[in-house]
Structure formats: C-alpha cells, structure tokens
Image (cartoon, rainbow, N blue to C red; front, side):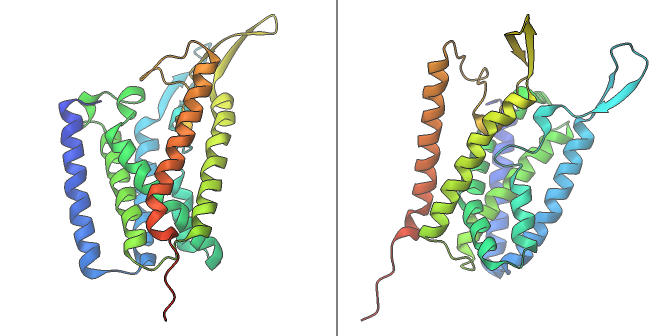
Amino acid sequence: MFSLNHFIRIGICCVLFIIALAFLKKYQPPLKNVLTVCCVMCVLSEVTKVLSMMKLVPSSDGSMMTPYLELNQLPFNLCSIQIIFIFVARLTSNEKLRKTVLGYMYPTCLAGAIGAIALPTIFTFSITSDQAFTHPLGYQFFLYHTMLLTLGVYIPMSKQVELGRRQYATTMGIFFAFGFSSIYINSLCASPTYVDGELISVDFATNYFVTGSQDWMMTFTDINQWRLYFFAIVVAAAAVITILYIPFLRKPKKAE
C-alpha cells in the first residue's frame, strides 16, 4: 500500500475513469445498457478472482488435495456485494425495487470504490504490492473498482433515476443492515480456539465492511476501543452518504 506500484495503479484508474466518463457523457447511453456491461464485467471479475486465488490444500493426513478459496475472498465486502445489486437493477421488472437498489448503489459504489482504490487491502491480505502488475488479482481489483466508480457517478448523471429522500432513507437502512450483519459474518468466518469451554484465541478472522480486526491500521487492546471505532465508522459512513445525497434532498420549488 502507498508504494510506487500502488500510485501507478491509481493513475491508471483515474485515466480509465476519465475516458469512460467522457464516453458516457458524449453518447449518454441508457442506464440499462450500462448495467448490462457492468453485469458482464462482474462475472469476468469474479471468475478471475476465484481462479487466481483458488489454492490446492492437502488434508491433515496428506491423503488428498482439495481446492479451497479462503474466506476473505468471499463476496461479502461493501464493493463485492454490489454484484448482486447490479444484477437486480438490470434484471428486475419491479420499478420500485429498481429505484431502491440504484439509490443504494449511487453513494456506496462511488464512495466504496474511491476508498478501495485509495486503500487497497489486497496488498495486505491477498498479494504484495510487487505483484500489482504480475498477479491477475491486481488487474481484477482495480478494474472492478474503476467500473464501480464510473457506475456510481453515472447513476445520477444519466438523469434516468429518481433520487430523493425516500432513496436516502432506504440507502441508510440497507447500508447499516449490511454493516451490522458483517459482525455476524466476521465471527462465523473466524477460527476460534476453545480450551475447557473457554474462548482463548481467534485466528484467520475476516474483515467485511471493515467492522473487524484492523491490525493493518491499528491494534485493539480493549473492547471499548473497538466499540469507539465501530461508532466512528458508523458516523463517518452516515456523513458520506448524507453529503452525496444533499443535492437530491432539497425539494424542488413549485412553479408559480
């Protein structure tokens, strides 16, 4: 993280984003067509990630080898879970559901992609920064998040989606429901060690929605530190979503 390769990747993402946005602004394609392209890119992205990160692991007795995808590669992050929303927004015939989904995707794709590109945790948990241009995950990660960034900007820019107070409220509800659920998911994916029925340690914990261990950034020594951290990210997320929605929360003036 913050290596030369990382900054080069950021530069490439910026160039691709500008090119994609210029194309969309010039031709103004229907959002449905853009979502179709995003669906294809999502499939290619996940296939690349799974095939490149799959490991062949021996059993404890060494008698067999099993292909295994580590738990931190499951699509439960803020950005990877957008795959579901992209397909729902593209395929649903329920207009109310579509508006709700696109209303959620607008701020979370935009802010989530920027955060992921700026702080790519893959360089901490999956590959090294030296592998940014030699490992398929380096291409998959940055191209996927550039796509999300472009989509997040184009949703309001297309003027084909109604964004307002209702979408703001449902976005807050969906986001924090996922955020709180990630506490359960992180606990389910961890490997606890018990001695005489007492929890002694936890290993290989995941960090979905960044609500878990932050050993790459800070170390918790007391549960109240985690509670304070959790409260801080809740406030920060609410602030970011609110800021991005401010232009759409004002009621239009009635014509005289």
